[in-house]
Length: 330
Image (cartoon, rainbow, N blue to C red; front, side, top):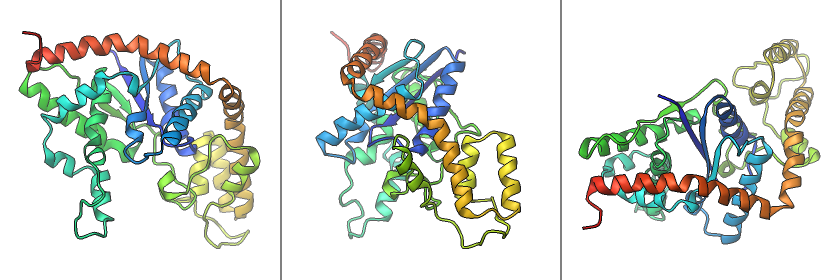
């Protein structure tokens, strides 16, 4: 079976280094290696946690430009807004009708929200959007019958749930959905943030992807390290500086840094090496981003063009699904 790759990024703010390493870069690599690749801006997912109209709108623009500036080839890939394909939301409802509530109860995001809820009502403040978003995510994937989805190791549950939901539908009605496989390569790992936890806006530990050189360096210098002095051997295992450097460097460069750790490199010098390595890769992305940022009409045109390419596929497939479930003209 020919691979059909699908990936997207929630439009919540300006992308950071974790987004670039964990989603954008590996997805673009896969797109170059395969014939069919779908990239979408998951703007409906954004409103689960953000009700600020201006921020949601600005984030869509920022994320779109980030993918394009990073090298997305729209002549060889499909690039569209989730909200431009209404069939996705229709499919989400259809899938919700075959999805067990117990499956949603096991969602990592929902369980995390419950565990941090200080109210006697464990569901206080938790919306149905947060609770059932794995179903919408499944619809994103199944709408175009993707065979493979690149994800970080911490997102594997999303694919497992999609497979469960698709399998349930296939069992009840007819085998119509592929059971997508997750792609977790060596270059798609959980990216550590400034404090060593997963890089995330919610943890406020990100390194910005598109900031100027001064801001980038300032962020990198904030990475938390231990109190070992220069000259004392450093342990690279579990070290945020070393992990981030390894994500950008060649094997020879990684070996060279390991030798420097063994020789007791100072943390300031190690962070400078990391800054130079990251900046050398993202500089052209930053320049391209700034160029496109002044041309929002071009971005809209490109996204509309992408939607026009994939919408006919969605219309045809949702028609088949309607026939299967009995929602058709009498």
